Amino acid sequence: MPAIKDLGAASRTSPIFSPDDVTVIFVLGGPGAGKGTQCANLVSDYGFKHLSAGDLLREEQDRPGSEFGEMIKTYIKEGAIVPQEVTIQLLENSIKATMEKDGKKLFLIDGFPRKLDQAHAFERSVVPSKFTLFFDCPEAEMEKRLLNRGKTSGRADDNIESIKKRFKTFVETSMPVVNEFEGQGRVVKVDATQSPEEVYKEVQAKIKERGVEPISLKFVST
Ligand code: C5P
Ligand code: MG
Image (cartoon, rainbow, N blue to C red; front, top):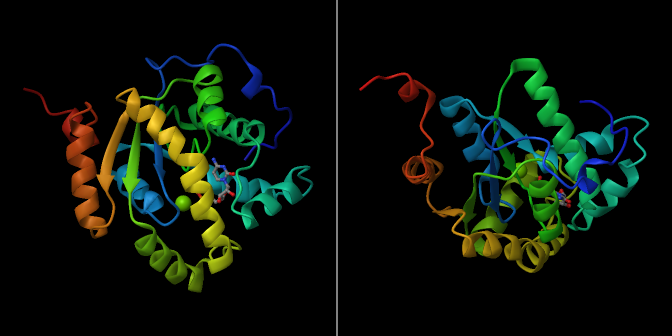
């Protein structure tokens, strides 16, 4: 992953990509809603590149010499949202690197935008999203999944103290993003309490309604 050299992306006033050239689908849902699991399915069947904002932040946190490492670590432990300039720059760098490397132009951006300012800044300065895939799941179910994941994930925030803070941040800071997009008719909502297989079936049916088809079907004529 290229190191962050500057934080110019978030302050640009027009998008660097057109939605005609680059397709971005935002993937949101509370912590433990199953975003990563479903993204992995979509990558293999639809040819998306999966960019997880949380993974990119953890990578930058661990990158030797990063000037943002300590700051990111503190925010993640506290379940707080890292300042958008850093996250948007990491995403932009990854989008560019992916396009240069394998020419991919379909992106699932998972765990982003988690706050209204990052939603506005990304769509203004990088590219407007096609829609947001929202995984709707009750806290009790997410808590159960996260505590279970915490047994093996090695994540500093999969413990009950951090989980409670992440839930609070999700409700207070991230849900306003979902609500704003929903008001614009730009949210595809999926019931994430079902089994991963059932959730995926619903995802496939609902994104089809928005014109997103699996790779194998794209080349079938008639
Ligand atoms: O999505 P994930 O659960 O991996 O995110 C872990 C943490 O990374 C979040 O709780 C938050 O502290 C940070 N994060 C962020 N901004 C984002 C995505 C994640 O600050 N857009
Ligand atoms: Mg994740």
